[in-house]
Length: 160
Image (cartoon, rainbow, N blue to C red; front, side, top):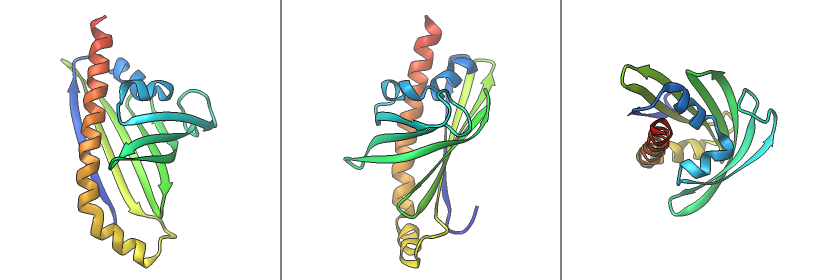
């Protein structure tokens, strides 16, 4: 990690098989039905399923306002891990999920990393460093909510 980067890791243990958890986290079209923070997902091109190069526009409610980001699948090691990248407002974002089978179900870990883009101005870099603690705190809360909702959906599907 560079000195300008910040990251947040959050994990949750889920009483459901890893393949059920994997199916939920890679279902872009059903994401807004599982995670309340996602208002809508619009596919932009690339493959129709979920693989490297799949692109979409995701609209979330953040800080009381709608925020829309274009995202792209950067890596997939099904059914173990995936990485998604986004670039917005002078910053680069990397989100990753790791799915780890456990004797009692699955541990799902999400890591979110933010850093100023290579083309970010000095002022943008300064502001990013200044606001990183607030951003990390809000991001952790949103990630925990997402993971708890994924857990709920996976455990409901596993109980069927």
